Amino acid sequence: MLRNAVQPWHLIVLLVVCLLVFGSKKLPDMARSLGRSMRILKSETRALRGEEPREGS
Image 1: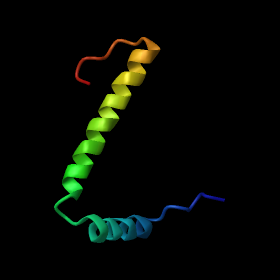
Image 2: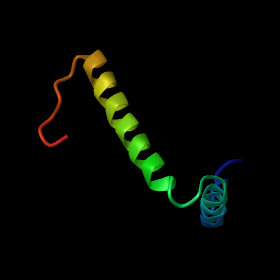
Image 3: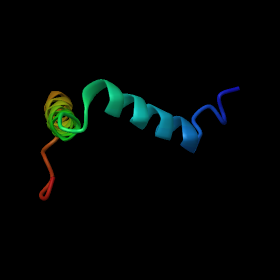
Image 4: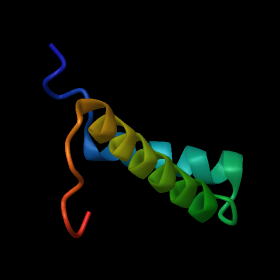
């Protein structure tokens, strides 16, 4: 049912809408903060599992 749900043109339309809504100056800052948040979430889930962080991560 959802096999072909996300086509490349969907991503292009989404990018254009984001540019129109947020502007080109705020997008890099938003991407940077999203990356930071994902790194924090990954480290917290690893800590909850009791795993040791690997070198280079």
